[in-house]
Image 1 (cartoon, one colour):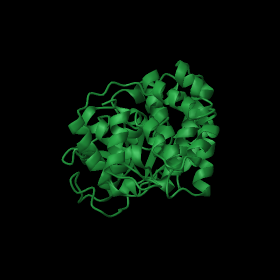
Image 2 (cartoon, helix red, strand yellow; image 1 turned 180 degrees about the horizontal axis):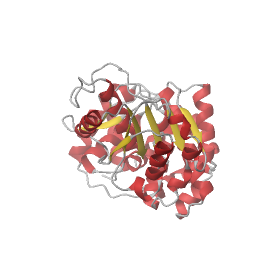
Image 3 (cartoon, one colour; image 1 turned 90 degrees about the vertical axis):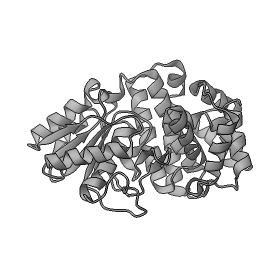
Length: 359
């Protein structure tokens, strides 16, 4: 994990010198509102001015960004002469920043040809996360929406940010629903890295510490009150989950959740979390699942199920025919299935969908 991670309040200003040498002009990539509201955008702009680095702003990244949007941002960046990218926000802007960096470096590529089956170099990327869920600031992945394939895909290029600035103050005013959904996403990264054929002693050490941080915040998540310390713990849990999946990848719930996000508009973390009770029940060998309980700080599976159920309340309208289609698509997704440590097929996947969504 080659990203240089800087953690602490006002860490961008205190470490603005690290931005020198990344390029001659920055392309700031973000959504329309959050970076303005939480102050992260201003802090980045002030740091660039302090270091005499010119910049331009692209603030049109949507939730679950598309291949078309990143191509549009690249074209804007090229026109303005930008040669490195700063992504500010949650997983959507930072994932988009990584894809834009690949397109900036490989100007012959378009949105349609970005996913090309090989890993290409990218322009330098800086990540400023303002949610605590994806861990994308320390992973090589960039997940984008492919409207032609009607799903979300990893672009397949290895793009670790050069620098990640982690400051929990940007998360202090994050709404409860976004806090909960992103926290569940962080939990899903930790768990799916742990229950994974690629899990190893190093990744498990990261996961175990991350689960302890996450467990510290259970009462806050259930009660809807968030202190600065809780925000920091969730930020660290998210980062450690990202570091873990950078080595192992994710597994079943992520692959299954993409269909709920694309077709039903369910936020990514919630789409994963709503499947978790029955995902954890599907394991024939429950030894590592039981170990998770202790790390999170719950007594047993029933207690964890109550927490997950309370955090993942949703009313998803879906037909049995749609579930059959989703299960068929997932059972053909070898990239996710190969990470699941037990043999699993269509029937089990269909059952997880059906039981989770009360169909």
